[in-house]
Each structure stands twice: as C-alpha cells, then as structure tokens.
Image (cartoon, rainbow, N blue to C red; front, side, top):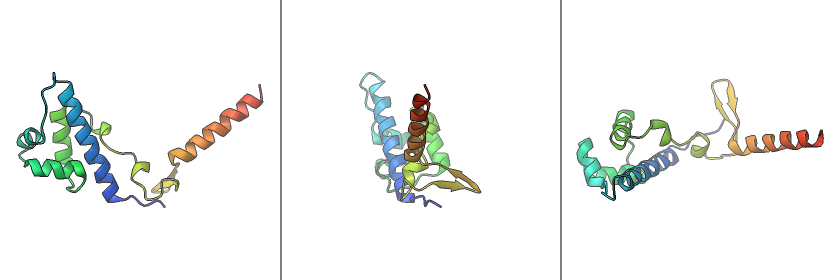
Length: 121
C-alpha cells in the first residue's frame, strides 16, 4: 500500500492556498489580498498565513473551509490528489480493499488501449 506523506500534503495545500489568494487579488482590479488581510479575516496573524502557505502550519478542515469561503473557491480546487502526496507516485494506492491506479500507470494503460484500437482499424 502506498504511503501518504503528510508534509507533502500540507506543502501542496499551502501552495494552492497561496495561488488562490494571489489569483483572487488579480481578479479584484489589482487590489492585493495580502497575507495580513486574509489573517485578519480569519482571526489569525500574518505569520500564521505565511506558515500555512509554506506547509509549516497544518490548518484544520474548518479553517480550510473558511479560507475557501473568503477566497470564493471550491474546496476541491486546493486539495492535492492522492497521487501528489505519495512517497512513491508509481505505487498504486489502496483504499480499504479497493486499489486505485496512479496517474502514470493509468496513462500507460490508456495509451496501450488506444494503440490496440488503431491496430484493429
């Protein structure tokens, strides 16, 4: 079974939050949404926002939802995929007794299937 690397999960989540904050800023006629502004809205310090965005502070699910509401984004848009958080992204991930296929393996299967279809034409 593949192992999820917790540090990688929070690094990718933090980067996505940072990008969403900057994208939100760009969409508001160049009015920058600063880390301080976001921290004030959430009742956190600028340093806390910096730490979340760098992956050093692990926000609760409730806090992640609040960030999404403030930045007007969907939760799914900032969550990294399971494969992005694996120690070995080529190793399949299992959830319970169900095995999922890593994206690189799925691409191999799709290409093989596509090539087989072309050969039959």
